[in-house]
Length: 447
Image 1 (tube, one colour):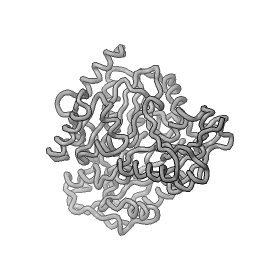
Image 2 (cartoon, helix red, strand yellow):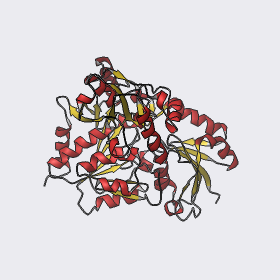
Image 3 (cartoon, helix red, strand yellow):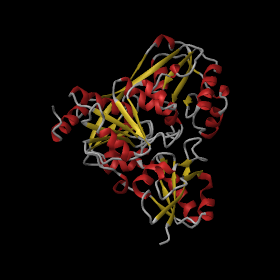
Image 4 (cartoon, one colour):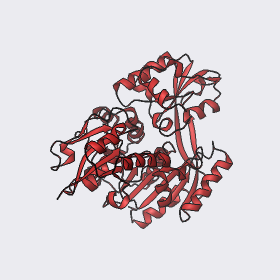
């Protein structure tokens, strides 16, 4: 039997998961390549044999997505599988046109083919766009469950930018574990808020092995929390699906893949940031939820901001460093740091673009909507070095760190800096405490 030749179009996350769960051990398929987008320095590597399995003794090469059309023709590819997230529908279909024009079929795998089942109750936290507030929602859910003396294991959507074989299953219980696994800034932004609170986080590449390890964690496990990435749908079948929406981008919940999948399949839809968005925008998002997910529970929440040293901001010229993915493929022009600058009386927000160096210059050229904020890009050592140099060159009085981690701990900042913290605070009822109470009762988790 001639094996059907497949290319998986991805960004070092969903693509590997789709391969592992659907293609890896099926002799009728031959995955001849992955392509990579969104994340720098992924292409040029291989998905290793240790992960790819016995059908792929040489591993699977990873190419830049720009080479897709040529690869389809040269490798005589039958089908291309689109497998990354936070992409406008026009862009998804633009890739489809490239694939079809080169002669191959274009495929999207769904939850039935790719969701794994856990033997523990699973709560998923997903979103309609990057930067809606998934992390603060996950933290709130964990806090409520911990108050009931339940042991919660968080499993994070993959961000495998290093040695893929070594990252097969990763467990993070302390801040030192972040160093041991050589985490990038993006990884630390997601893991550190959990481990600082004493929560255990798993991540990696092979999510079948990861879920089994989490279920049998030596510290115990009552509930699995899927902490989603971008606007992807979960890798595990949820018993309670929570989706977070952002009224700063009203209408995006119906325009970006696969965020609308989360919206339509969610049990609970949270409209976050109602304290900083317009009333009209909040209403637009609420109407869209009611139109496409009428049976879901709607919660409204504020993204409450606190800051370590407000006196550093008041009356000063400030540089704002925001979460990288939120600004880049999340397409936001501002984040928590910008809100803090306004609320705490900054005199001026300094434009970092004239001071950008190295890879940060490339970032501003690629994402032209970013103006007077600096994205915290730190996928590798060079980007981290460029971030440090750009911050230190910028002519300002102080730096506002709007990222989920304390950047001053991992780079040397030569001027006063202060960190922004943000938490989810629901407005009235229904709220997560009520919903989780019902979840605990339903799954007989009360000890």
